[in-house]
Image 1 (cartoon, rainbow, N blue to C red):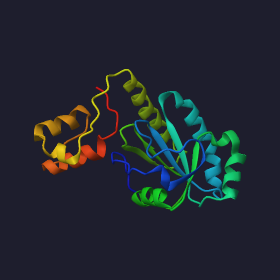
Image 2 (tube, helix red, strand yellow; image 1 turned 135 degrees about the vertical axis):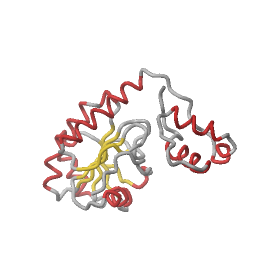
Image 3 (cartoon, rainbow, N blue to C red; image 1 turned 90 degrees about the horizontal axis):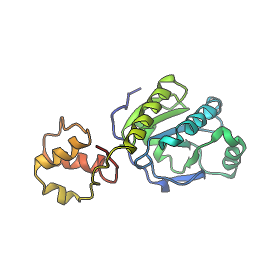
Image 4 (cartoon, helix red, strand yellow; image 1 turned 60 degrees about the horizontal axis):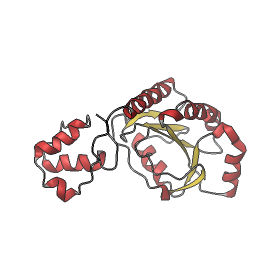
Amino acid sequence: MPDLAGRACPLFSKDLLEFIKGDPTNLPCQGCPTIIEMWASWCGPCRVVFPHISELARKHAKDGLKVVGICLEPPSAKLTNFVQQQGDKMDYTVAADKGQKVSGELMGAAQVTGIPYAFVVDREGVIRYNGHPAEPKMDEVVRQVCVGASAAKSQQELPRITQSREELAGMPVRALKNILRERSISTAGLAEKSDLVDCILERCVNVSYYA
């Protein structure tokens, strides 16, 4: 099972999901630490961890943590009824993966098929944990990304990156590197100007960073 920590989380439109509980949101949630958890109604171990995930959601709500449980089953009245019956045991946003694109891409990258399975993503959109949601390590990673998010609130927000690919390509290499370094993003391995532009577009556009 590959450790995906340090990799940028793929971006998914809310339109790929059928939201059963909570407000529709793109994934990962923009500018917020996010837990994305895969589950199914027929999965006994999944039901066991619902309360623990709800506890994390409530504990770190003040830090901006967003939790989205993604069911691998297609939307149905039966599934909606199941979620409603869980009540406060599922005290977070819940959605069904309509075309299996979200679960397929994330679990494919992790090379796993078993559930429950979770991904913790920091506010910059970087995966910091992938694994079983009951592992103590996940709790610690959630705490770390939430502490970082809380600290950021008291810091000065850096200017948003709004330039197009063409505009970025017209900037000096030094300026492109400064954009990344100001946001604590390594430029190692970005040998070409196009690599710097690609990294900025992937990691910096529409994301809040603080100095």
